[in-house]
Image (cartoon, rainbow, N blue to C red; front, side):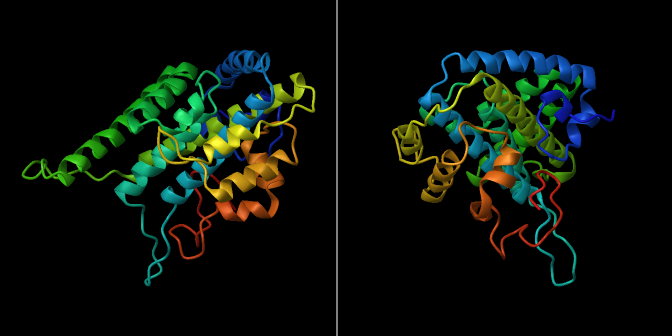
Length: 287
């Protein structure tokens, strides 16, 4: 299979797709695009300043999760011998989880629930992400389910051993990056592609100015009964900046590459952090 998913979304984002065209037949993706468009169009029927702000927050959070996944699953800094360290098992798990969190944030049927969507436990996140892949293609859904179930089994064993309940049993298997990295990349590509479809629908059906409900942004940047704040001060400032330059959310790649400007640097790993000194970004191409 060799096709460009952007021709199906209708948005020329310039994103370098790899996993989607390799795994999903073009006619299958076209069929799913029609259903996804219908869901996005239903969203626009009650689209106002509050929903506009909610989906900008969701889009930004999805972007941040994708960058986090890329950082966690990229090669670590070179050792003194010039070799790259592979990600640890914990980094692989966390990278998969971040990619899955990005994926569910841009599903039109998943309610925001005042930020509860961004706080789901990992079991729920993996379940929703798995089902969203299975809906497109059952074969790839089975592959995704196997990958995510392996990650959850690793985490269960980690928690048992941390509690002293797994000692004396079989040695805990290592969670490898080679099967996990393509799965994370696939989830990130789905997130980007869905954001293209949503952005196209919004551009076609909304009539600016729509405005922004800044209370949504303020709520996400404040602790609540459900947990800690979803956004820090830097996140809130960047989202506020985006709200000043676009009338509604756009695809996440465009937000990163064209809209955030100098603020994009604040989302990338700092110098000296794991992954910061590599050009190898197998999950989400940051540079």
